[in-house]
Image 1 (tube, rainbow, N blue to C red):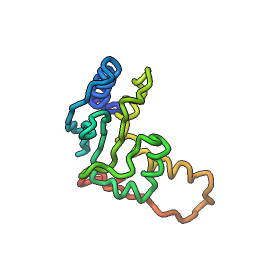
Image 2: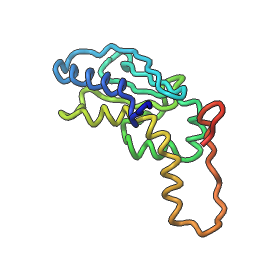
Image 3: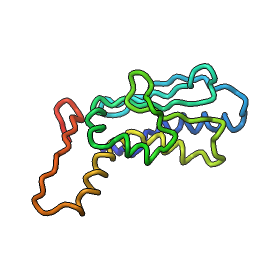
Image 4: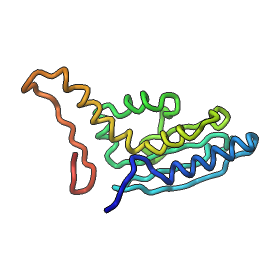
Length: 156
């Protein structure tokens, strides 16, 4: 049996390592460029921000993200990630989080876990929408269904 966590352990460990180094050496520039595959064709990309190298970008590509957006994914992610959520994703990505290393809190572990849960939170957006809708519906009310083409031969 395979036990899967709701977060990507590789992303979390990579960020914890980089956050620790940023706290130890605040003036050091971060150089990184990692591609981390997840299940179901999802890919994380964790890299530095370019010239200043004082930010880490955590991006994710989900081939079905446009379908998630139709059901409020960006609004939900904005609630969860706030200012971390970039207005525009990095080229070729669905969503990007922008972490300023100069603004790291002393307890940075929750931030690393939160970033590692990006796939989970993208998927949760659709479920949250419909869970929130349940108490307001009349019996037999017509509601537009969400159909997410999650895998080649599977939909949610």
